[in-house]
Amino acid sequence: MAIRVFITDDHAVVRSGLRAVLETKPGITVVGEAADGVDCIKQALQVSPDVVLMDLSMPNGRDGLYTTSELLQSLPEVKVVILTMHDDEQYLFRALKAGASGYLLKSAPVSELVKAIEQVHQGLVYLHPSATKKVIEGYLHGQTKDDQDVFESLTEREKEILSLVAKGYTNKEVAELLSISVKTVENHKGNLMDKLQFTNRRELMKFAHARGLLDFD
Image (cartoon, rainbow, N blue to C red; front, side):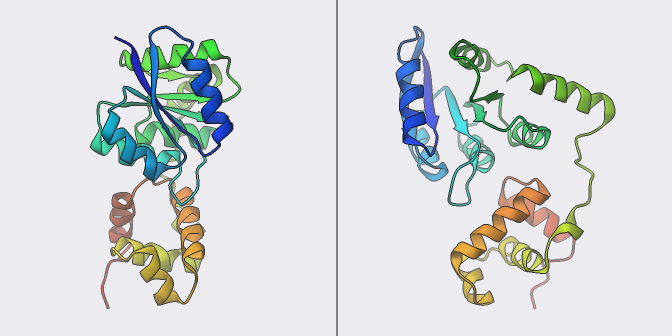
């Protein structure tokens, strides 16, 4: 049975290119594509893919890491391969933490992409060579940064938004309370998620509770 692949990337040219290439490969069939995280989850729930190719950088405050975490809550059997231009240790560890089974550079040859799809479908983890080296080095030297306290690196505005989002306020409600635009809220929220290396609201709530930020006045 062919491996059912779903493509998520905010660039139409990239999606078309990946589809055109993959549809020529025996044993692989492309069952859908999406331009953002929201549409990815919506469509994936309908078509139940085996493997999702996930762009790391996407708009609307739902990047590939956030979308991966949310997707796997609904479809835990799906395997996600992160496709990115970032050969960066920080993104690599966050991708694995979010539940991704693969991490591949967009500059990789098609043969490597196919290999990644096949391996994650078999239940294995696929990382591009330099990423594998970083994981090993991180393990040997304890460089995962999970214990690093970055709370003080947040701006006062980011701390305000962290508290309100953790309490359950929507972006629109936060914008009204702070007299700023929804876009500004989304930007601040994205920045603090990056700084704290979080991928979903539950992690924010747990962190905010530990910091005493959930007291309702």
